[in-house]
Length: 616
Image (cartoon, rainbow, N blue to C red; front, side, top):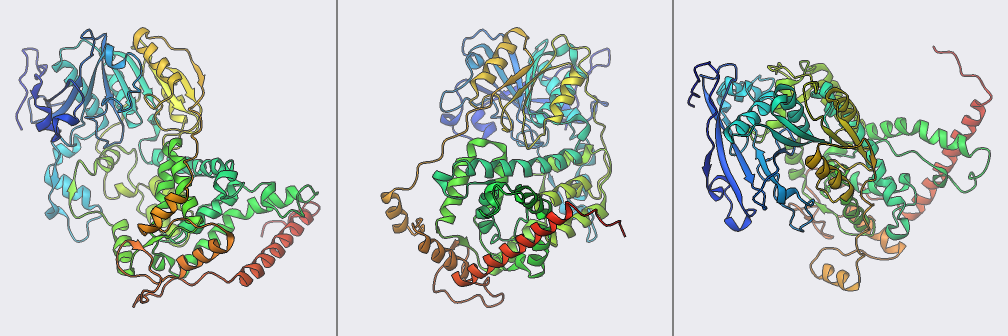
């Protein structure tokens, strides 16, 4: 690493952009590059407090205005921490770009330091001892402590300013998404005189950096998962997975209960009238019954989860549909819901579930609990930034308690929230950097703040806090998509483009995108083709549905990821999951369940007229 020259005043001189071929810098063929894209690097200080000291390089891409007359230069960041930024401005393949964006603006993306193209570092494992509390910390800080300390949001903002200087721009406009809003507010607070029009989309909360941000996101995701079940329930005539969120939840749970690692143990969505036996609907006991079901739901889920954990289902489950992860991923964008529903319908209609052998189960469980023995800053950037900046050191006891709760059947998203709140990634890692309290007091143009009402990744509280701190104009968007500009919402795109042109925006609310349509159903040709290719096409009819489900649950397992064979030899070490009950057993269980519910309803009714007992 070199040093940056100083001017006579002691201020660092702006390093020029080192332009280079994009095919070499990005490692892609020219036909895959957007027309007119330029690539380069800029040399910046490792420590801005010591501009004469060591330096590093950050990469950038630029797409110049197609009109040849750029009205402004817009810098952008897609979030993370750790998201790849260099392709942030790539035009959409379907040509649906907001009108005027590519025609009238130069678009620049800066890759944060430590990421691909911006001097990523492979950390030496020799610095990890046998009793290391945090191997990532010890490997990377042992390799280069000064460089590791420099990986912060503040330095990402300062690197953005260094690129501005290198491009000889007096000011820049800015678009940040998710974590990119944190870089944006830091930049505007540090360099208000160089800040033009700033758009902050799907905001992180300045006071939640970073454990609480992750915790609040986990809570919000559980609510959004229930929204997904509600969306599917509203389309029951199409999907046939249940006409209430609770019924869809149980269709989903049937699959996820078989996943490697054990059931998700989520608390069921609230029950409603259609979830009750018909005999209770419209009676005086209807609401007490609903109250009983909903009040006892968390406890029942917890008891069931504990029973499954005690039965070691984390070891014996071997389905690999990935349905749980796909569901959590679908909380980012409603447009993913039809595919998720289609997959769920496939399995509930009798589609074969891919499974792995039990040796592979053990390897998968081990991989979930242990980091890779290779530590790279470009892969681990999320942990590096959040741990460098998290306001309080991690709570090892809190992490352990949350993991025990998960291992003994606790709610999977709630326990993840507890793990995040305790700072699991940051155990053995004291914060080394400050976070900047955002302020828009010195901005000539206050930011435009965009946020979905039900965003489950960055809850909307962050937008209210940012808008207040920056004096920004808050525009809320219907729905819960994470990131709303350039995602097909024409109303949002018009607001942003008008703001970039005029600097003016009106606070208010715009609708989200219309709910997506379900995917087309399988027709006879699809079924025949899938069956011929061994995909286990869905079957029709209640008898086939039951038989296929029973076969899928009881089929012995062998090999790696493949459809469960019907006549394979049983696994030699751990027995296959127990078979599902017979129809007669199902009927008996249903009768008992109704009796149990009746008892709970009776107790609830009595409680309406009986004062509660004093606490022990």
